[in-house]
Amino acid sequence: MKRIATLFLTLLGFVMFPSCQSKSGVEEDLENLTSLVDVTFSASMPKGEFLTRGALLGEESNSALGGLYNLDLVYQYDLRYQIAIYKLEDNGTYRRVVSPTQKIEDLNKPVVFSLRLNPNRTYKAVLWADFIPQGTREDYHYNTQDFTNITLLPSDATATLNDESRDAFCAVQEFSVTTNQVAQALVLKRPFAKLRLVATDWDPTAPKVDQLRVTYYGCKRFTGINLLTNEVKSVEIPKEENVTVYKGVVHKTQKEYALGYDLSPSNRTLVVDYLMAPSEGQTPINIIFEALEGNTSLVRYNLKSNIPIQRNWLSTITGNLLTNTGGAVVLSRKLSPQLSFSPIH
Image (cartoon, rainbow, N blue to C red; front, side, top):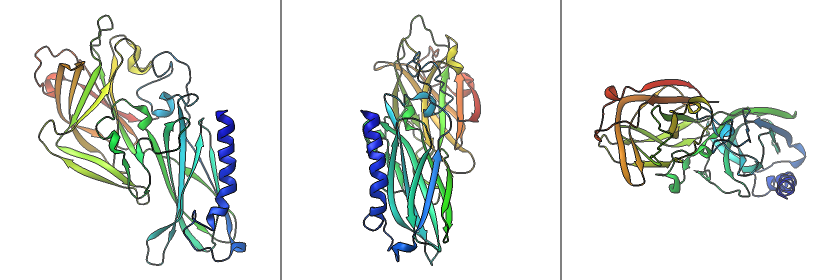
């Protein structure tokens, strides 16, 4: 039934979209309906989709990978694609002329958007793709009402750790329309860096940790992105500790991930976070890591090491994160974590 409903909505979108162009969907005055040019955009995600179960996220899950590899696109999540079109004005600015149009897929496969635009103009196509629970169409993690300011929803502001469905992708492409048909392929890129903390001293015989807390301080926290310009917005988090605490959970007896570091019985990915990042260069962050059993704090570390994050790259911290018997804040030089840096897939 789900596939029938999805097919119906997709066909409905093809039927409705051209009519919307002469009404509310297109905000540009179409000068001559007979002169409109067919424009087609295609987009596809990287390969992914491992559906077998083993660890909580599947037998092929790996905390080094993105949401496509770690989420169930058959039974739990859909991919939502939204495209908007902006026209270049005479003053050098862009004005939205096609409001965001959705397509929802329950599998990772290419999507195609077909529309019609006025000739002899220059436009920008802006695409956003994210994960939403099956059977829904509304914003889930991100407020996408304004493509010039996509932000995290308030409900996610302090509860965003260890959620692979926060992964997302975007694409921007300028193009010109003459009198010939236009066919463009959009390249999707992730606007995030991924951070993970991996303990190498996990005790599978007597697990205790089930709650995690991370505090970012003395660094920038990026709060939004303008897809049209690729610029990100940020706030300066004060140097004082315990300003904003981000929380997450882990399962005591079953690992979330199966492969990579988590193959070893004594290794365990404890924290995963997706951090919006600038389009170029590295950004340093400072964090405090705390592991708890229920509400009882077991260890707490201050990682004062200016950890680098970079868009579409994975920053990994590994070490004995759970064996601080003193219970006090420990500097990173005593913790001796190993930091690695690699692309996200």
